[in-house]
Length: 355
Image (cartoon, rainbow, N blue to C red; front, side, top):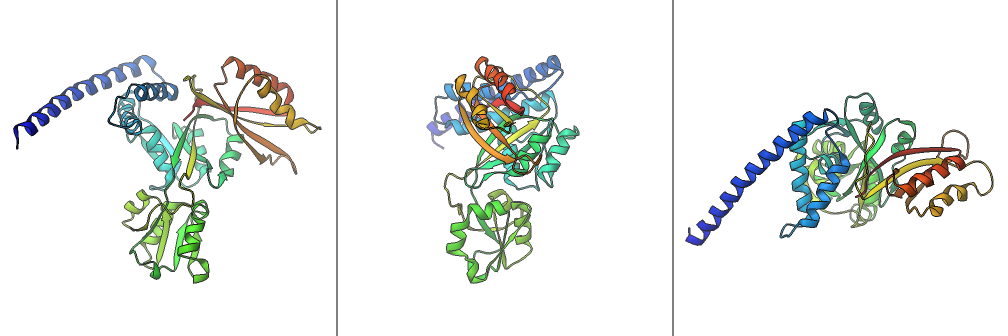
């Protein structure tokens, strides 16, 4: 060992010792805050502000993405000093929904796997989980209808959003594609990899595509069948001990799924927010224009508009809308007040930090 190497390692040891002291101090302060608040430990607006501030201060060489990941874990650890947190998600273990939970809440939470999106809502509504994470739309395949339908019905609020890049892998017990007779996956994943599968494992060649409830379930089935493969994520492959036959087989390299955090919590403004709402138009000419008019009138930017059958009557629709800003912002509050007089139905789903 050279003298220079030893000197550098001694400096790292000294920094690690200082980091340990600072981390212990931070955890102690978090515990004190929990005693003072005596309430909700997870504050989405506060955590968003902390991460934004740190990214602005970041001098490198670590990129902001790594800083966010590091401090999300630190906040997860410190949050646990205030109150244990349970988060429900669409399981089983190894799904992209579980990855979304870890990305937003860190690893120091109890991740509660559910068998359906409906069960995620039920667990949170019943108080068996503090929060739930549900997929709401994919950049390739569009809206997740069941999540939208349940958002319309529930008393829960949207507390946050997570944008998760989705990278699909072809997984099997072995890497010989000629031995594959069956492919398991969720219908959305099949759709996201349609072109790759057609080029490499076409249906005409006799390879069957079998839908499953989740990608993790697909990986489990492939692990039980030497002539089967699964389209799933990296973690599912690791859990079930599968071989990676091909990576990043999604047709769109920017393939991303947006998840929403649901809970019984009103979120304060963070400074960079989004508000989600659902509304329906009155049955008269120009009614849809009337719904959008107040947003333009008050200078409110709309980032998403999605129509969905209302289930209240034939050919009746509701409109899911995302707007930029918090519902307590003056111009948004005025726009919503005007909308209440024009819409047949209006429900604010929640305001939360935008990603």
